[in-house]
Image 1 (cartoon, rainbow, N blue to C red):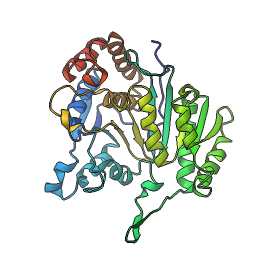
Image 2 (image 1 turned 90 degrees about the horizontal axis):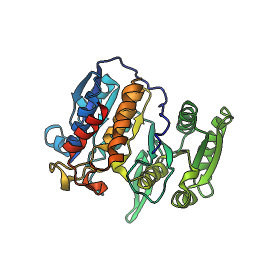
Image 3 (image 1 turned 135 degrees about the vertical axis):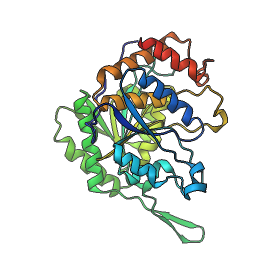
Length: 350
């Protein structure tokens, strides 16, 4: 399989020098296993890191009264960069999502989720190389909701010119730096004419500054249908928060699932690279979790640091392991354990 063009992230807000101090947030469930696996591989590049481990999640509540201790936020602010494993969020009750809270506290306004086919991973489609750029700070995820009367709840969708313009510019800058040819703005402005209409207005305004990049728009429901019929037509996609949450998972599913796609949450002062899959408590501690998603996020982090050669080495080694097909973890139909997978990737780097 031909290696894809090396992606170049939008310049990071913090460009530290080696040794790189990185806040390491292992997370819950399989989080510590997959983050430890990624640390081993990144250190095998020969690059020097200082890992500042910070714990978050349900286990922190008895000690701190919150799943996100202030020390975690302070550590990320200090280092400017974090590598994070999955943290579970209770459904319909319990504590607020640590993931969302961290993004709000650090003003991580852009979520960037690349998804492309991996060798040896069988999927219904080939030729997929899509980057979803999701606005990360507002929309229905602002969390402004209340009970109007018993049995009736109102949840407010917040869309601002500032946030819409900022995410549009991030998407176009990403496309420019990576020689991407097309951006699709995803919306529901046929129904939400004011909120989604404002988002599109901002995208169109920014698009005029980048005449070399084709800009198109697509209603979100049609977009979902197109993704599962002709996904190769998409290049970079930019959208509001809720649509981005759904579509980024859908796009990951086209190339093998959340276990093989990385992500970056980018702000003006910090960036958090994280796996977006769940914490899988049912297999925690059993030694066969797949660390690929965190590793993909780590590769994105290396490129942000300017360590392009190291990032390419890790990525090529990962592709070689997938091409060989002998070290697939169970989620991909294989029998390899996490440690076996790690050693195979490190061996392929040598």
